[in-house]
Length: 151
Image (cartoon, rainbow, N blue to C red; front, side):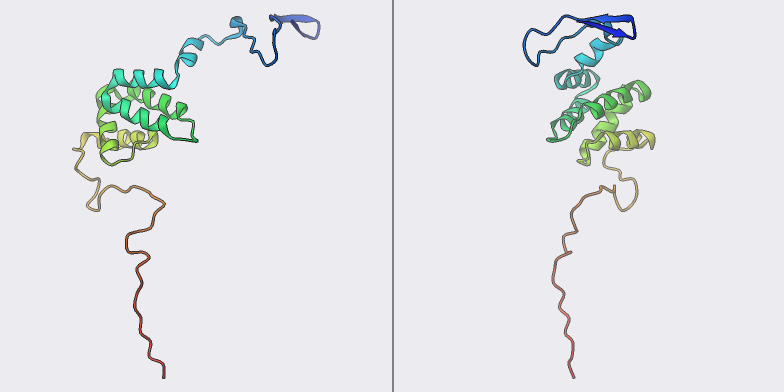
């Protein structure tokens, strides 16, 4: 199959031999295609494991969510190691796991706020670390007894 732009031949591709067959011309790939194709879920987890066990656990949790493509946040998590270093990323992942909030955004905010330098048990403020949830508090639905006097 030949592809033209106006009268100029732009590309030549092999024709597909069966319906829905993917025909790929490697000359049109970006220069870093091996990195992109190699970044599967398993590849990202193994890259995270080379950083630390904590980073691997966070990557696994990000990638394990159903209905959400976690590849992009997992890649972003791994890029934090080049910006902040492996030790700081490991400490930030450990803190995020300690507070059961293993998300890319959480790890990034921990690093930006230098909270990875605190002990995991040390909360940010006296009220503890704030973790957003969609649930209401334990006593929210408790009935309150109000007696009104009818005269």
